[in-house]
Image (cartoon, rainbow, N blue to C red; front, side, top):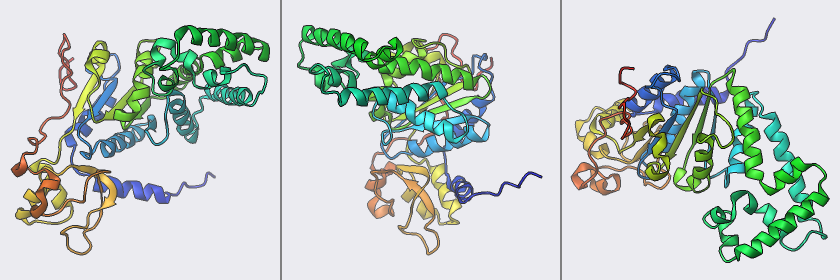
Length: 374
């Protein structure tokens, strides 16, 4: 007889966090609705772009959407600037999170382990030609000389390097690696690690995606986008092969995706611009704390709060009301109207209340939105 699965402490924590989540009803509803729309329907969106000022609640909404996807049977993973500093480490984070849910990107992880092993061998080899180990380690060859000048990892290394000199180093590296490693696949892996590993990563996504929908989340994109934007665009351009059709990616950052780079993908993108608390959301938050004083609504309208669990609100509430409501990482605790400037209330020139869900992504010839008829 199978043993009954008992809930964990984290299960109870998650349920309480969900109870504390306030606002963003339209965005949550649109995301949930999209999960039920077949990929072949023109109303289906494959990319969600959450953007807004620091502290407005992007990370909390991202976490909420992730949980919704998981509850709907999606295999989910999230990458942020705390755990990834290049495309390879981003793929590694995703693979690790998948493994925790018994879904392994086996070939990718095998190739990644080989890459780290061989890179260590190069770094510790006293016979390696000058500069070759550094060149391979920085993945400058994979990025390409022109792209490397603007890449966050290799750009600083190559900014002052003569292209002809780098070309000589590349040739030396290729010859040295061919002697050092007999397997041509290992040579390609070291010369172009991002490309080689991404191909294995995409193949793994397709294998898993054949049986289970996938939701990937990229947070803090104002920072992670510096090294992920080019890589994600490569994924969508089929540079590494086709992607599974049941893959939804959410990108969250302070800025909207660059229209000059993402314009061709506008028909599959849903924008989710976030603004501070509207009056309705302020009322909802206060009601969740059983506070009925109408005078308090103005204190909270326009506050740049993350609308989910993560910190304690202690200012101006009766004892016992300090329950988790996640605040912006950089924003101060909200306080009563005497300090409304910290909350950016309408009286001090805050943006107008947020009243819409997903805005249609202009320009799209058919003009579909999630709420449009197919």
